[in-house]
Length: 437
Ligand code: EPU
View 1 (cartoon, rainbow, N blue to C red):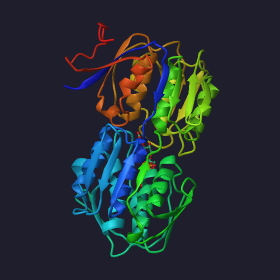
View 2 (tube, rainbow, N blue to C red):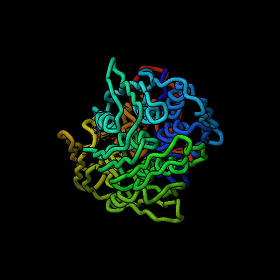
View 3 (cartoon, helix red, strand yellow):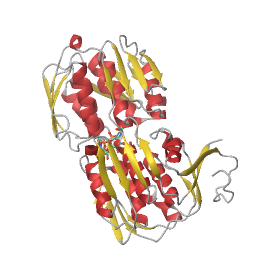
């Protein structure tokens, strides 16, 4: 039995919603906690399957962890690390766990970490991670699907990334924290999650400058300089952008609380150009509303501070019913238009040519039986179903559960008609009986 959403569209979302901690930050902070021979507490941790997987990865290293879901904090006691292996069974479930490579090499001078391989949205190589570590003096062998990394000592290096990769920047920052001398990462990723990781590490006793710019300088410190800390994760900008899209798509009006508006500048700018109203009402709260049909726009996904690829599918949903034609260019991943065939089944007019999608706005979307292919494509189908006429079903919710905490409860709080039901039959027909809603 698998779960599915049943969503009746057409109700404007109204009220307030509070955004949780950033998935893509907290997973890296958990790995960073391995650096100090101490106990660390991370607050504002969202209850997600990806967080559970990361806890399992860390526990396999012999590190003690606990997760207080009520209070939303994790304790990681990394006084002892007894194993340096991250097994394929876990890494293949969540590629972000590859981040333990940098942390283990820094702390134990050895790591055996499964290569994550590709995933639904693209090839997602890790060559920059490997080359960067080699530049720091780490000997790398790839055998039987695992990266075996070993070093007698790590030495600071000048590293230039061909693409400002988020994961490579993070892995190399972690590896460099205790390297001898200074490491300079050029063309580094500038995402808010990188800044969060640097702040976390600096609070722990590391010496990192320039995070949030394209050049990061890490001056190596001694193991004894690193101590346990208490740290609160930044809000999830992608969850915030998803809710903002859902409010705009349903012509609703809502307050999105616990956001860092500066992290959403580029995305918000595009929403405003389309015709949405966004008002800062408190330093960490935005009011969003939309009354009329949106206007189409074009956008290209870019590394931060450009248009976030993780919100590309959400904005595409808005374009499906906007006035005019919009063109999206996806520049980060080879296969991140997985929502397109599903949106077409709802009546969207989308022409796709490699990494370009041309969307001609139609008057409305209609409900359909849908399937989530990956996290963000899945979330965009939820938004589309909330906007569409009729009751849709969405299967394969495990993808969505990776990155959205209490998704349906938060949507219901805003008045959205959504239920999670266990799959009772193999039928993929649109639900006729709306008694669930
Ligand atoms: N790349 C390489 N070689 C490398 C590293 C990356 O060719 O060694 C390429 C990738 O194949 C990809 C591009 O560079 O085409 C960007 O990849 P990046 O390393 O920046 O992404 P990531 O670290 O694997 C994180 C987020 C993604 C988000 C991207 C871009 C986490 C856990 N994941 O992935 O989030 O899309 O940055 O912002 O932080 C999501 O949350 O749904 C998600 C996929």
